[in-house]
Length: 73
Image (cartoon, rainbow, N blue to C red; front, top):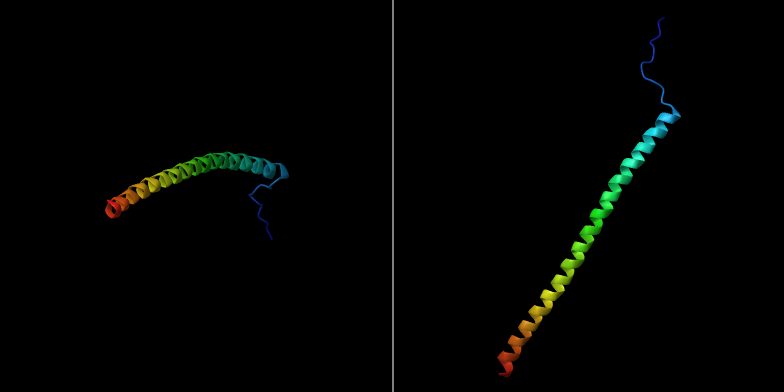
């Protein structure tokens, strides 16, 4: 009876620790970029919201002036 040798190396605690440290560093970098992007998107949404309210105010003013002119003049 012959036995085959295992060709794969044993995984050690140090190799798992190194792989986990590398993974955490890569993920931290990705999340830092993601958070910066989220902040930019949030500021764009806030500025667009302000613009929409400004445009709505202008439209309401214009339409109300047309109503006043149509019925009272």
